[in-house]
Image (cartoon, rainbow, N blue to C red):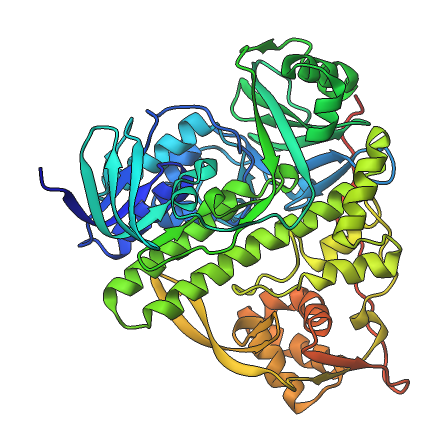
Length: 565
């Protein structure tokens, strides 16, 4: 029997596989795309809490309306018992009191561009996979890859559980923690942290929501105990995911079975126990390991790794699915451009790998900071101390901020901040996690001299409207400064006048008539602090010029105001 051939074969029909396939067929409809999924959808899966960058991707895929019609809760933010004291605090995507009550289903516009979803993966994943099929992907469920046929580092074909073999010009591993290609090709795995946890979870019916915001809006709950933390994620009007995360070492030493660990945690957390007083467990307890890792290579001669099989960051930041779909979108663009042949293939592959690695490493690093900043882990002090030592964390305010800054604040796609949080939000979290510097560099200085000494000017990939564009950037060591959007604007203005007060005065004038400047203006302090931290600006103080203080009194990070439970 002759092997059936495709332009692209994708292993895994979860969010990363379906997003890659759907967008590839949208932007390169003549390509033949196969998606192989070992299970039959719908099926449950953890990773239910999404972040705002997911909205534009769902809209681009053409599934926003279907996802919205599924009546998933609108994620406005999260409530934490985490950090310096047991008081609850919130991180919101927008201030909850500004959330306008709107009928659902709603459109991807206005405040919905700043919020996200909490999804039932059995429904969400099927919506995405069905969309890939609608756009022309050949989708085969209940079909496993039993062998990866390889020649050195090149894949020659895939043997399937049906007994047939399929071949492709390019192969994509989106198989999640199965890591089919990584194992078959013996891809080296890095473990940049000693953070090794396990998760135990179950689903519940008719749990109360901790808070109702507008129509269908709420927050996930992240509650710390002395030895673990608990997630509480409403996924629909009646269904809730509740999980317990704890160090694998503590679990082993406890001698308790997973169900005993789970029951113990819920009984000891009064807020969660209260929300469950009228609820019923579905008795579908499951567990897995949550060990952060990063694959050394994310592509080969004719293959790619995307999503969780390329790397995993601890779930404390709720970033896994969102990061996977962001990477999948960029991979779809990459494969479409390789087919067009207008850019060098190796450059396209390297740019994809650069972005995906950067996202995963940043979240792993910031996850370490979150764990070592949680004084509520009273039974895990040895664990957090060891983690802090191994990570090089010294939690004096200045050194803690310097440590976070080592990871870089400017990403390839020009997101300013770290771990999905802006610099201003991260500084505000110092009120709850760990004290930070009372003033950042932009608050203590007013002369901003651009510094590109030793930097090389190269091209960075920008992914927009189905195409990959080459934009200028500076690269020095591991730091990158993309020269577009607000960074290019600041570069041009500071090249003419390094005065910070003069810069702000000019921008405020331009903002009166220029919508782009008006929208970028609130982000300027963060962008300048990032450029200083990453070495692109030398900041000094001129006593003849005024200082400009950063506004840290933001309403999206603050003490919880819900009715106390």
